[in-house]
Length: 116
Image (cartoon, rainbow, N blue to C red; front, side, top):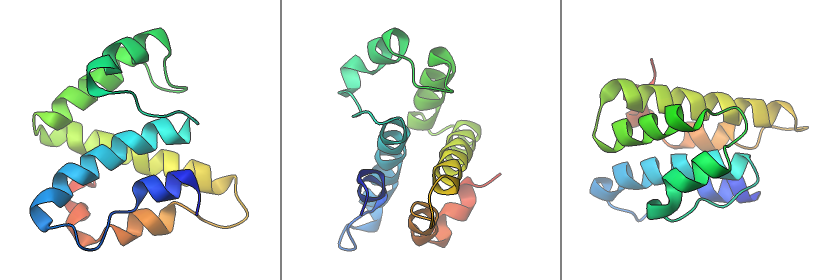
């Protein structure tokens, strides 16, 4: 199992009420993991993104998506989810077999709400 794949997996015993929060954290972890980096502590996230932007992400845009996602903005959640899924697909395209697509699919049907 790759580091990114491990980051995306959620334990089966996690209660449903905690899954939403864990999915959001897993998404942020995945964004950093796909770039080969460890997600910084929350209080350092703005500085980290501005000082060391993630490839393909404009810092202010990503920070806006994070804030919108944490505020529960449906448009931000859908955009963030779409971006993470697209980047997971691009990651898989560079591999001999899909690694992250099956993990995202394994998140279940409740994530259909996040798809545009």
